[in-house]
Length: 442
Image 1 (cartoon, rainbow, N blue to C red):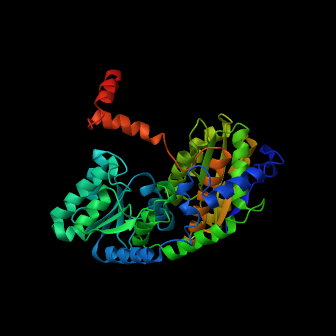
Image 2: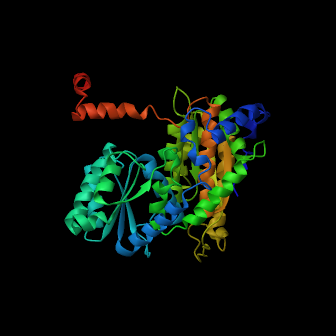
Image 3: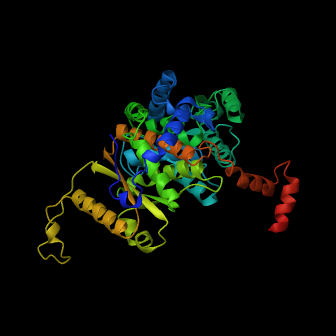
């Protein structure tokens, strides 16, 4: 379903870029499928598209229908992988203006992914007097940002509906057996869904973590999982014809040639949060031990009038991965203007999709001429099965790429540094010495 075009990167790649990495890719794929590599305890996502809990999947669909019936808004509380995947899929498959368009499904408001007072107050104001439910997503229940948000929205629910009725509007996606949130959910009677032990947050979009909000938005999650299952089957076949092997090898070869930044570009505004999910997936998986490509993203053609200048003429330390969808969801023709004031009558009668495609093609050639390799990934259309395929593809390539770099693609030790400093400055018990040291530096 997904096609990779390397023709606009060949001049920047050694002729044997794939063959020379075949042994390393074979080893990386074996580690993913057997869980024998670094972080192997977190490779449950590899077989997830066919090896998921069907009973929980049905409960997810049931909960989504209930929320659609009794709520005008779903508040999703989570940070990092606990919200980026769901938002990425909802915006890509529904609309990047999802909460503004007329629809039969509830609005979805994402909170708990920061600590901004203004953003929190705005979310509360946007809900207003409407009926709402909450999906709180946290493995432990103690991560600061979502825990603070849950305190606030739990209080709002209980004030609006009373404690018992509020509990029927809270859905907790958390550890299956332990943790503060799980204990609270069991005590208060919240419906719970599982964050699997063997799947890290950034790989969790196809678990209950992402599927409940996605289903509430009306996305066909059966088709989403079907597409991922197709990708799982296709990418499990080893060898140089494997599109994941090709992409992982090309990225690694470009990295070794001195490229340090991978820019993901798409010509669809609704792709923006998919790029945000992709940036977390790759940045948190590869960026360690002083290694890794820096993942960045642009929205074309808008950013061609800003970041396009740097891509064309700046430091030659980057390459682009362009995401292309063959068929738009609708058709729009450019009209004729009798006065032709803008000089664009040569476009009259042509579809806007045709113009967008020529912008893509022209940009690729210009950037290649400017010394920027371009890798093009093509999918047939923006639809659930294709998006499921693409999600699994990027996850699988990420695992391969981490092992090619000889890092653990499933841990995130660097994330803890800011938390320790923040806890100390907030006065969390046990951090007194660190607090004094930090304040002396400030």
